[in-house]
Length: 401
Image (cartoon, rainbow, N blue to C red; front, side, top):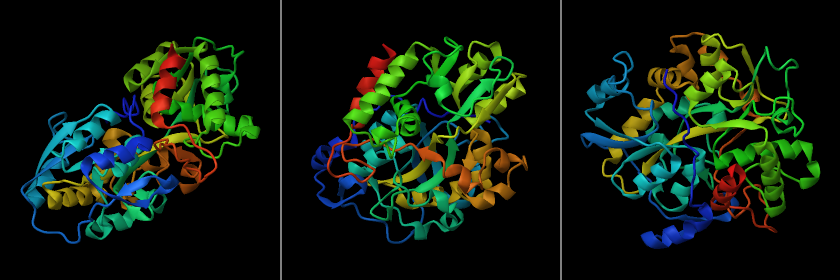
């Protein structure tokens, strides 16, 4: 199993609030309003599926398009190429910003975008609406992943869900004597674990602080951790500046977090299920929980470029990657819950879907999936502007010092 993730959310410098300018650059005309009211360029949707063009050029997270070159036993690309005649060319991106930049070149047909990139791609007219009727396996995608704020606009799908996961709270059971059940454990200014707390290194982590404040300070009126007005945003930033004195190390490399918990350098902090599994496999005494406030998380989406030169092969790829067997393979290799409900019948580890809560919609109802913060408040408020992601990026730099 691989697991990339997110160097992902790393620094994004463009916010969707600036998307109108991008639309202007492309000459597209904004014709509709999406979630939060941002302009949506008019980009045609593919009406039918033709013969494959012989190749497809992908931008993907590492581990999403394995062809056996990393591990001969891990290969769902070669069977696709044999079945469809579409040769797969994959450009692995390290961050969401890099994905956006690559897709804007028009040289790539499809991208596995995270929620902190997908709205930027939509608002800039870089990707096209997706005709889910041309993707038969879409029918078996969990309902909880369809038509969400990060993969649709105005009830129009802009991609095919790939998988999902939650950002969890992990602790060393031999060091943290009382099992935590709240994110307050990592924000307590008087924490006895000062210097041993870890936090995810990305501007999107500001949403974790906002999620905690949503419950801890209800007077702030936070409804959506990605829709923060200036007062709410300032409160989250202030909390993170206080937390800075508690954090021993910010992490974005999952292997380093495994080692930090194994060595005891970190004893408490945010994590992913796959990291907990690896830490336990290396005999680190750790446990994880989904805190009572809920959590942030990710749900990646395969999107088609508006200028795709190989759209038929792109659609064939999207259908393939969410087919039960391929989706099971990539989920196990990467370490996330699959998108296709039937994938749970194909995993080599028959407990895999239970471990990753793949079928547990009540569990995922507590997860606030990454969504790009924009100036137009995603929680529906019209009487106030929200802080866009470019300012989140600036604030994150100030928080870390």
